[in-house]
Structure formats: structure tokens, C-alpha cells
Amino acid sequence: MADIIQLLPDHVANQIAAGEVVQRPASVVKELLENAIDAEADSIKLIIKDAGKTLVQVIDNGKGMSNTDARLSFERHATSKIRSADDLFQLHTKGFRGEALASIAAIAHVELKTKQEANDVGNAIVIEGSNVASQNVVVTPKGTSISVKNLFFNIPARRNFLKSDTVELRHVIDEFHRVALAHPNISFAFYNNGSETFNLPVSNFRQRIVNIFGTKTNEKLVPVEEDTEVLKISGFVGKPEFAKKTRGEQYFFVNDRFIKSAYLNHAIASAFEGLLKNGTHASYFLNLAVDPQTIDINIHPTKTEIKFDDEHTLYALLRSAVKHSLGQFNIAPVLDFERDPSLDTPYSYNKNSSNTPNIEVDKSFNPFKDESKIKGGGTSFKKESVSNWESLYVGLESKGTKNQHDFSEVHFESEAKTISMFSNDKEAEHTHTTYQLHNKYIVSTIKSGMLVIDQHRAHQRILYEDFLKNMTTKEGISQQLLFPLELHFSTQEITVINQLKDDLEHTGFVFSNVKESSVEITGVPVGVPESEVSIILEQLISDVENEVPDSNFSATDLLAKSMAKSLAIKTGQSLQKEEQEHMVNKLFACKAPNVSPTNRTTFITMSVDELDKKFI
Ligand code: ADP
Ligand code: MG
Image 1: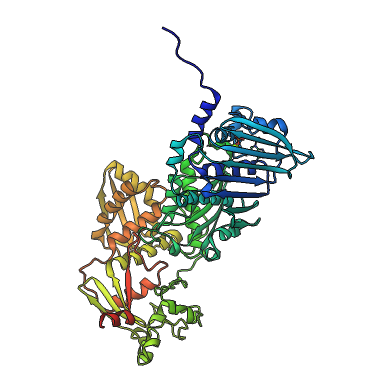
Image 2: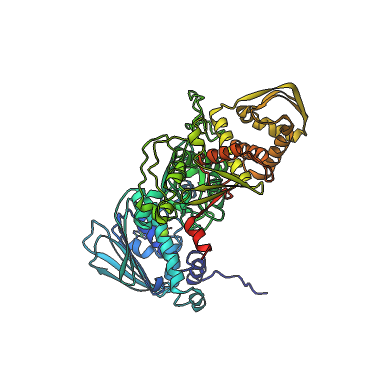
């Protein structure tokens, strides 16, 4: 039988390769922008028409190409960026596969103009479907301009596959954002159908984010910095209260390259745990710098997915750095800590911190922030120690007779009256009243209307923050048991207990003996009934086994959550007036009073206005 195998002609091979590299106009945008960056340009213009379907042009002021290189650049596997396979692990450029220009030229009309600084004139090449139509000497500024016209002109099926201009433009803008965010040291301009859409001057990273996403973004950013031998992290996460329903603003850059990583995204999500409303996603803009030898970018033709040698460590470092930032900026429910370099736990403790109980208040917290009226009201505090939730109560009695408009307004100039949970000030205690509804909700009047708290969830929040604080400051107070308590566990369970032993001890547990299949406990945290101990530990073990990707690492958080869940006052439990009030006080002294540790709403408010509407 005759031989049937033959080599594919170049233009066919290029078209096939183009299928991988160029899916849509946005892919062309990415490749051309990256080439301009690799050419060391510090000013790059992107011009598109009809969402890039008719034209994608990139003009840079980079180093340009020689005559020969200009022609060669369209050959497949023609690259100036690597010479041997070893270079793959020393990459400092975006490109290296030498495929992009060849692929693009196979499926579009391409015009290239390029000039190197030392030359007086440059070179122009026109290529259509892999065929060189012309090559001329031209007068052109230093740098390179590449126009890609009529994408997929010779593959109608692919052209028909393109989405509407709106959708394709969205992809182009996304790509532009990614590249522009990764390179704030380069100025970018973006023209869409003749009008300037973005003009981004050289700036720092924060300014670049703000220039792209709008001035309002600035106040939403929390810096994240971390510098270790394996990984350098810099950038920002969005404050939890600004989290969005869509996953839009989530950016990882590894060595200045935008990448997608579900795994690292999980690290961030878990750092935000307990802080986000259900169904919302944290935004982040994070630069990760790693040794190029420890990553493999070669696994995907568009290079948006990369392989890390040691993903677990990156995960832990990232999660810890973000948690630390959220805590440091008083966003997460973590108090008084400094950075722990050992990474065993995300937080270290302040050895010298005193035991004086004080209420720590998130001053930025305001359950009425949606109310437009806030803007007009003063937001200054006369006394640092006055927690702002009090202002919900302040003046309730005295100003209650004022007109309705006043009544519904939230004022923040709290009177110089301090209500402390530890104060015996009778007057303070009676500034408001609470009621319990169906042994489930605590209802209270507040200045603007009423407040309804879910007792079980609220108590979880309070206990969670207490435990977390005790564990990070290692100040949990223990209560000694009259007789040691012996509890039996499987070997697997004992392993988990051993893992968590230190943290458990910081909450107040005292283990006198941990054997192969049992533990002996001689002390428990104050307030934990002896009868609950085995339930708590069992719950904890199952939580650790079921929930955590890296149980070692988030043990503290999980432990606090698990114990809070076990010990919180349940629905159905009747509460004394003082207990109700204490709960309200403690809840609003929390860092994140509005959600339970598992992210559920702890309270709702209803203003008199809203009530009035119901009576119309
Ligand atoms: P790669 O970027 O993977 O090397 P490309 O097909 O994108 O492959 O580009 C091929 C070569 O053309 C590059 O290696 C580079 O030498 C040259 N080149 C492409 N675009 C530019 C540009 N804007 N300025 C200077 N040289 C360029
Ligand atoms: Mg390239």
C-alpha cells in the first residue's frame, strides 16, 4: 500500500496553531500587547474597531526589529526570547513560543511597521493569510506598529463563531485591564472606534487600579505585603463590605503575568471567610513574585495557567498575608497581633498585652450605611472610647419627641456618655429596652427604628471573636476540673487533637495526658460546661476532617468557629433581660457584628420610615 503520511504545509500548520492561540479579537490584543512589553516599550497604544473584528492595532515605542527579524517574526517557532529548553525556566519575557505572529498572520491581514533606534528608516511588511504581499522601506518612528485586520477572513466558520461586539469588546477590555494592571510602569492608551476609552499614565500599582476602575476604588483597597524567600506578595484586596456579586475584579499576577488559579483563589476566599455576605466575592489585585525556576508557564498556549512547584506553600502564605492585612486594617475579627513568621498559624500574639478587658470596636461599622441620610450627619466621635453603635441608642428618650425626620436620622456625634459592658452605670444600662421574641430573636428599639437580632447567630459571632482573640493572644483562662476527664477517641481523631492541642490550650483547655486512644483533660476554658467538652471536641474533629484543605494551617480559625458553634446559645433558649442586653452590647463590640462566623446575617434593622410605609 502507498505511503499516506505527509507533512502539513506551513500555512495549514499555522492555521491549526492559530486555533489554539487566537480564539477571538481579545487574544490578538493580548499577544500584541505582550510583544510590545517584551520589546521594552514604555508607551503603548491599543486601537480597535468593531470590537477588534475589523481592526486591532498596537503601536509601541519599543526596540523595534531589524529587516530580517521583521520578516522572520512571522515564521512559526521564530522567537528571539529563548534559545534552548533550559531558558524556559529562566523566563523574563511574556512570549517565548514564537507562535503568535505566525498564527495571527495565518488568519488575518497583517501590516507591520517597525524601526530600530539606530536606523533612519524602518521596514513595512504586509502579510495576508501567511503570504507576504509586500515588504518595503518606510519612514516610521522608533518602535513597532502592528495592525491586524479582518480577523478570520479566511475561516468563515470561526468568524461566525464570534460573539456580538458587546461581548467581544468586553473580552478585549478585560485583556487590556490585565496587561495594564501588570505593568503600571508603562503608559497605555486605548481607542475604541475612534474614541479614547482609557488613558493610563505611568503610575504606581494603586494609582493604576484607581485609573482603571475609578476613583471610588481607592478607599476600598487594603494593602497586602509579604516578603519571604519563596514568594513576594504585594498588592491589594478589596474591603469585605465592597465585595461584589460577580467575580469581576480578581487578579493574580505571577512575575507580572496575569494568571488564573482556582486554587490560589480559594486561598483568598478562605482568608475572607466569615467576612463576606453570602454570594459575594472578594476583589483582589495581587502580584506574586516567584523564582522563574519554580514555575512552569508552558502548560497552556495562552499561558494563563501555570504550574507551581510548591502550591501548598503559596496557598498558605497567600492566605496568611491576606488575613493579616484584613486583621491589621481592623477588618477581620482578629485583634492585637503581629506577624508570625513561622506560618503555623496566621497570627502571632502580643506577649505584653494586658488582661484588661476592653471593648474593641470597629469604628467604621455602621448598620445604617445604606441610608443616604448619613452623608449629611456628622461622623466625628467626641470620645475615642465611645463605640458608635451606641449612637443608635443615644437620645432615644430625650429626642424621641422631635419631628419624624430627625428621629429617623442617624447621628454619630455620640454624647459623652460611655456605655461599657463592664460598667455598672445604672443610667447607661437603662437607655434602651430589649425583648425576646419566640425565644429566638432579641428585639430592641434603636434611634432610627428597631433592631432584630438572631440570638444563636449573634452569640456565635461573639464567642468566635472571643476564642480567636484568646488563641492569638494566648490568653484563654482555664477552669480546673475537680476530677480529670477521660475521653476516648480513634487513632485518627487523636492525630487531629494532637494537631490542635496547642491552639486548644490557648483557649483554656488543659490536657494532662494524650494517649493512643484517649485523652485526659484537667482544665477547660472558663464558661465551658464539663458536659459539653466531648461534644465540642467531636464537633471539632469532624469539622477539621470535613472542611479544611490544609487543616494545619487554619486550625485556629476552625477551632474558634467550631467551639462557637457548639457553645452558642441555641434558638429556643429563654434569656433574661440582662442577658439580652449583654448580648446586644457584646455583638456590637465585635469586629464584624453583621454576620455569624459562617457568614449568616446576625441582625436586621427596620427604620420608622419603613414601618410607616407598612401602615399606609
Ligand atoms: P514570541 O513572543 O513568543 O517570541 P511572537 O510570534 O509573538 O513570538 O513574536 C516573534 C518575535 O517577533 C519575537 O520573539 C520578537 O523578537 C519579535 N517581535 C514581535 N513583536 C515585536 C514588537 N512589538 N517589537 C519588537 N519585536 C517584536
Ligand atoms: Mg509574543
